[in-house]
Image (spheres, rainbow, N blue to C red):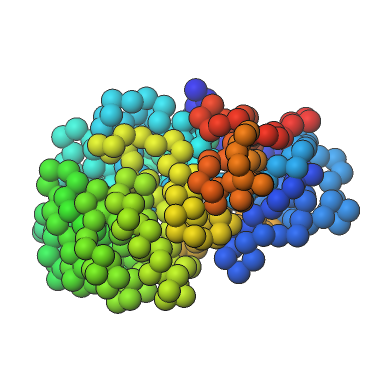
Amino acid sequence: MALSPAPETQTGKLVIRNIGLLLSGALEAPILDADSVVAEAGRITAVGRQADCDISEARVSIDAHGCALTPGLIDSHVHPVFGDWTPRQSQLGWIDSCLHGGVTTMVSAGEVHLPGRPRDIVGLKALAITAQRAFTNFRPGGVKLLAGAPVIEQGMVESDFAELAAAGVTLLGEVGLGSVKAGYQAQQMVAWARRHGIQSTIHTGGPSVPGSGYIDADTVLEADADIIGHINGGHTALPLSQIRCLCEGCARAIEIVHNGNELAGLSALRFARELGQLQRVILGTDSPAGSGVQPLGILRMIALLSSLGEMPAEILFCCATGNTARLRKLDCGIIAPGRAADFVLMDRAQHSSGADLLDSVAKGDLPGIGMVVIDGVVRAGRSRNTPPAERVPELLG
């Protein structure tokens, strides 16, 4: 298991050439007419045809051998605790394992599984600041994890949110997992958080852990959080009529997760498509949870929603990358100059019935991952978790 005690960025030039399919992560142009990507100091500097890119003097060169390149996948909904350990499943190395599923960035929806998690205001603020600091300084497998997401409790006032923001906290944990469950109470605190630059996510559906509650569509709409967390339930979903109401009744992000109701997830995707609002759809796993840890959870969501939702696979890759980056205000998720050099190189799995990578995913097969790059640094070679790919990239130096 590869562990990085501190962030690491490639200092020289990285060149990836002979890319067979380049997925941009952007809904407006999900497939780029390009076969090469250049990055320096962890940032993309050029995307295009090899003849048009300066690939000289590369410190690291990768021959993609016709593989596809996508932005690093983003898991919009995880529940970390400390380091690469989860007490929920008593498992070590779960984040590093997700790296082998193509995930390069994770966003915490609250460090709720910490044994003895403090619920007093001083304690919850201390935990959030500690988690934010810890995962800034320690990146398991190189994965970037935005953590420090306090669960709001009754009695908090605006100055508490100002204090959290000043300390570097930018997220709220799932609204509804603490004592604040009424829509009007949540609305006030969500507004305070937003005023101080803190993004909010609300629990949706039935209770998931002791202390959480049933959050229906009316409560979600009244609270007006930035992210409709696991709109397909975590695990129990709202009735489809309420899910449609949420899709129609606001413009907030529609988060579909692995550890939720699959029919509800497919329905939410269909509602978003009918409304012409696919830009609101983002993907997460909601793990670790009672269902366990899913290292391939984001890939599985892409394949599920593409195959059963009759949606082109390249669109779902956008939901798992560029959409999330835009709605979460991240600098990754898009293959374009200036963005973080986070990439996944993948190909159709061996013996898949699909004609190519996108066709195989649209038929429900998982791709094979050959390499993962974060901030211009190769963090994983051939995945230990995905099926073997037909073609794999080669690290030349």
